[in-house]
Figure 1 (cartoon, rainbow, N blue to C red):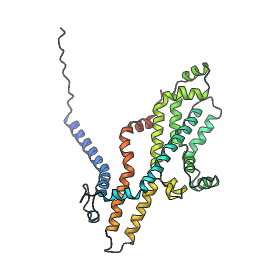
Figure 2: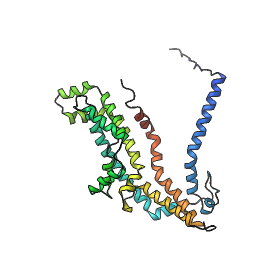
Figure 3: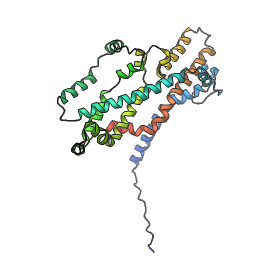
Figure 4: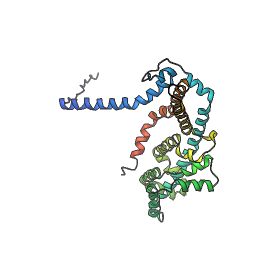
Length: 302
């Protein structure tokens, strides 16, 4: 019978200065965490508080006179959920087009045998410093008769230069021997891309999906510029309208007349912000590692 071997875990003792340093680090991190969480917690508290409590400035971190009137009004209105549907359509289709176009462009530019490769890369990098501008893009979309359509939005943001460069660097790190072996077996370029390069590039592709999806989810300026039909507005544009409405009510209300109408608008605004930000906030912790990995892809090459 084999004897039991007892092992003692060695503990590394820190000096007093190191302990003080760790206390300072944890204190600063806790303070930064609380500062980052405060706005979100305050919005939650306001959305569940009464109009009187919000108007009196009593709401800080905990709901006062708890109620769900703002959320009930959101359900009855239905505009937020219509705009959320538009945002989902923009995000899903836009992300697919982005990843598809970025993958094709990055794969082509990763091939050193491509003639004029340096010229193409230089032209693409140039767009990071000098873009066409808002007015030329607006005229282009209008001349293509894509105003007030989702297609116009997808066309304007089909490729983001930084994401394409990151994917290009990753494709360059894929061993050329894999592609040559597939080519000897009779595979053409599309087959090599789909069956060789893409399977070993799932991490970078997942990262690009996240980058593009978050960008579409938070899209505000381009939809406001190219869309005119209110039934096509995504969530962020709808939120901006609600914020403007609340501000107009506040400005137009005379002294002593800031009654429940304005306060209800403030509560309604807080509930709307929570509804539209909650999905991405719930998803982000599970996908954060891909964002971190995406920032490092291409920075270290073997």
